[in-house]
Image 1 (cartoon, rainbow, N blue to C red):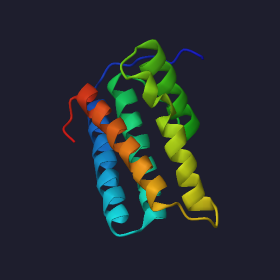
Image 2: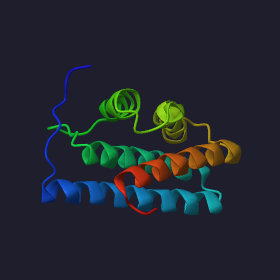
Image 3: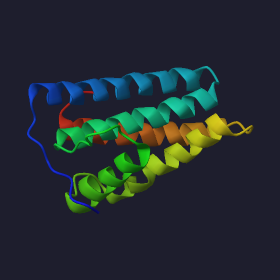
Length: 142
Protein backbone atom coordinates (compact mmCIF):
# COMPACT_ATOMS: atom_id res chain seq x y z
CA UNK A 1 0.00 0.00 0.00
CA UNK A 2 1.54 3.36 -0.99
CA UNK A 3 2.28 5.77 1.78
CA UNK A 4 -0.41 8.38 2.36
CA UNK A 5 0.86 11.44 4.20
CA UNK A 6 -0.65 12.30 7.56
CA UNK A 7 -1.50 15.97 7.53
CA UNK A 8 -1.88 18.39 10.46
CA UNK A 9 -5.43 19.17 11.52
CA UNK A 10 -6.42 22.72 10.64
CA UNK A 11 -9.76 24.27 11.53
CA UNK A 12 -11.15 23.37 8.10
CA UNK A 13 -9.90 19.82 8.67
CA UNK A 14 -11.68 19.64 12.02
CA UNK A 15 -14.83 20.98 10.37
CA UNK A 16 -14.58 18.23 7.74
CA UNK A 17 -14.41 15.58 10.48
CA UNK A 18 -17.47 17.04 12.18
CA UNK A 19 -19.43 17.36 8.95
CA UNK A 20 -18.76 13.78 7.87
CA UNK A 21 -19.59 12.42 11.29
CA UNK A 22 -22.78 14.50 11.40
CA UNK A 23 -23.72 13.03 7.99
CA UNK A 24 -23.03 9.56 9.38
CA UNK A 25 -25.34 10.18 12.32
CA UNK A 26 -28.07 11.60 10.08
CA UNK A 27 -27.85 8.65 7.71
CA UNK A 28 -27.93 6.20 10.61
CA UNK A 29 -31.12 7.88 11.85
CA UNK A 30 -32.56 7.74 8.32
CA UNK A 31 -31.65 4.04 8.07
CA UNK A 32 -33.49 3.34 11.32
CA UNK A 33 -36.54 5.35 10.20
CA UNK A 34 -36.64 3.48 6.91
CA UNK A 35 -36.29 0.16 8.71
CA UNK A 36 -39.08 1.03 11.15
CA UNK A 37 -41.32 1.81 8.16
CA UNK A 38 -40.54 -1.41 6.26
CA UNK A 39 -38.41 0.40 3.66
CA UNK A 40 -35.64 -2.19 3.78
CA UNK A 41 -33.83 -1.32 0.55
CA UNK A 42 -33.68 2.35 1.54
CA UNK A 43 -32.55 1.37 5.04
CA UNK A 44 -29.71 -0.75 3.62
CA UNK A 45 -28.64 2.16 1.42
CA UNK A 46 -28.59 4.66 4.28
CA UNK A 47 -26.86 2.19 6.65
CA UNK A 48 -23.99 1.83 4.19
CA UNK A 49 -23.58 5.56 3.69
CA UNK A 50 -23.70 6.10 7.45
CA UNK A 51 -20.82 3.65 7.92
CA UNK A 52 -18.91 5.02 4.91
CA UNK A 53 -19.14 8.62 6.14
CA UNK A 54 -18.09 7.59 9.64
CA UNK A 55 -15.04 5.87 8.12
CA UNK A 56 -14.18 9.08 6.25
CA UNK A 57 -14.44 11.01 9.55
CA UNK A 58 -12.19 8.45 11.29
CA UNK A 59 -9.57 8.69 8.54
CA UNK A 60 -9.67 12.49 8.63
CA UNK A 61 -9.38 12.38 12.42
CA UNK A 62 -6.07 10.59 11.93
CA UNK A 63 -4.97 13.09 9.29
CA UNK A 64 -5.56 10.77 6.34
CA UNK A 65 -7.26 12.40 3.40
CA UNK A 66 -7.16 11.90 -0.32
CA UNK A 67 -6.46 14.99 -2.40
CA UNK A 68 -9.04 14.20 -5.06
CA UNK A 69 -12.50 12.76 -4.62
CA UNK A 70 -13.21 10.02 -2.11
CA UNK A 71 -14.00 6.64 -3.51
CA UNK A 72 -15.39 3.63 -1.73
CA UNK A 73 -12.50 1.29 -2.48
CA UNK A 74 -9.91 3.81 -1.24
CA UNK A 75 -11.81 4.56 1.98
CA UNK A 76 -12.26 0.86 2.74
CA UNK A 77 -8.60 0.07 1.98
CA UNK A 78 -7.29 2.94 4.09
CA UNK A 79 -9.65 2.25 6.98
CA UNK A 80 -8.75 -1.44 7.08
CA UNK A 81 -5.07 -1.03 6.29
CA UNK A 82 -4.23 1.99 8.42
CA UNK A 83 -6.75 2.15 11.23
CA UNK A 84 -7.36 -1.56 11.84
CA UNK A 85 -4.23 -3.46 10.74
CA UNK A 86 -1.45 -0.91 11.24
CA UNK A 87 -2.65 1.39 14.03
CA UNK A 88 -4.97 -1.16 15.70
CA UNK A 89 -7.47 1.55 16.60
CA UNK A 90 -10.43 -0.72 15.89
CA UNK A 91 -11.04 -4.44 16.39
CA UNK A 92 -10.26 -6.72 13.46
CA UNK A 93 -13.79 -8.11 13.44
CA UNK A 94 -15.09 -4.90 11.82
CA UNK A 95 -12.69 -5.24 8.86
CA UNK A 96 -15.47 -6.83 6.81
CA UNK A 97 -18.25 -4.46 7.90
CA UNK A 98 -17.93 -1.81 5.17
CA UNK A 99 -17.66 -4.28 2.27
CA UNK A 100 -20.43 -6.45 3.75
CA UNK A 101 -22.79 -3.50 4.19
CA UNK A 102 -21.88 -2.22 0.72
CA UNK A 103 -22.67 -5.61 -0.83
CA UNK A 104 -26.17 -5.50 0.66
CA UNK A 105 -26.57 -1.88 -0.45
CA UNK A 106 -25.61 -2.94 -3.98
CA UNK A 107 -28.36 -5.57 -3.95
CA UNK A 108 -30.85 -2.99 -2.66
CA UNK A 109 -29.85 -0.38 -5.23
CA UNK A 110 -28.91 -2.30 -8.37
CA UNK A 111 -30.85 -5.56 -8.48
CA UNK A 112 -34.48 -6.40 -8.92
CA UNK A 113 -34.33 -8.36 -5.64
CA UNK A 114 -35.20 -6.61 -2.41
CA UNK A 115 -33.28 -6.94 0.81
CA UNK A 116 -35.10 -8.85 3.55
CA UNK A 117 -36.04 -7.42 6.91
CA UNK A 118 -33.67 -9.87 8.61
CA UNK A 119 -30.71 -8.94 6.36
CA UNK A 120 -31.43 -5.25 6.78
CA UNK A 121 -31.52 -5.65 10.56
CA UNK A 122 -28.08 -7.30 10.45
CA UNK A 123 -26.63 -4.52 8.31
CA UNK A 124 -28.17 -1.84 10.48
CA UNK A 125 -26.69 -3.47 13.60
CA UNK A 126 -23.25 -3.59 11.94
CA UNK A 127 -23.52 0.07 10.94
CA UNK A 128 -24.50 1.06 14.48
CA UNK A 129 -21.60 -0.86 16.01
CA UNK A 130 -19.17 0.53 13.43
CA UNK A 131 -20.26 4.12 14.04
CA UNK A 132 -20.29 3.71 17.81
CA UNK A 133 -16.68 2.50 17.77
CA UNK A 134 -15.66 5.44 15.59
CA UNK A 135 -17.56 7.92 17.75
CA UNK A 136 -15.56 6.76 20.78
CA UNK A 137 -12.26 7.09 18.92
CA UNK A 138 -12.95 10.57 17.56
CA UNK A 139 -14.75 11.65 20.73
CA UNK A 140 -18.13 12.46 19.19
CA UNK A 141 -21.39 11.45 20.77
CA UNK A 142 -23.72 9.27 18.80
